[in-house]
Amino acid sequence: QVQLVESGGGLVQPGGSLRLSCAASGSIFSITAMSWYRQAPGKQRELAAVITGPGSTNYAASVKGRFILSRDNAKNTTYLQMNSLKPEDTAVYYCKAIILSQDEVAFRDYWGQGTQVTVSS
Image (cartoon, rainbow, N blue to C red; front, side, top):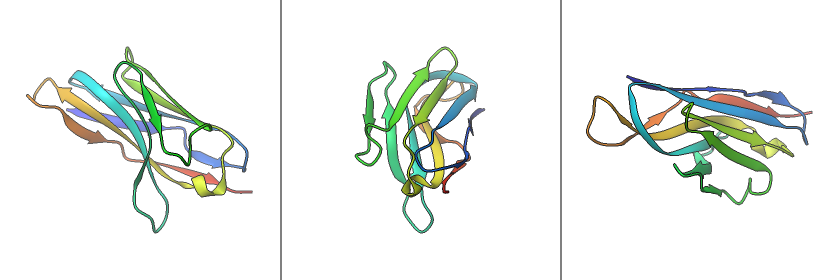
């Protein structure tokens, strides 16, 4: 069984920084893209950043230049460094990974449980 566990959320003042982590564990055979989505109250979930297996990244325009996404393939973990945070970054942040488990024959999406990020003075 595969699971994703996020950590690192919390309350931060505008202009501050937070680092989110997402660790995949279980019967993993291979992981391709890992990504972070976010969902603000009353809004649809949106993609914030994605990183491929080799490490190429892409960002939503709203976070580009402020967020940095990285991954440690040896640890099956991705990190989202969030800098210059704004109140509009307040949301629940979800990690998603495309994983081929040892028990299956096709890649599929796995989601974490979400971690709250609140930017407020």
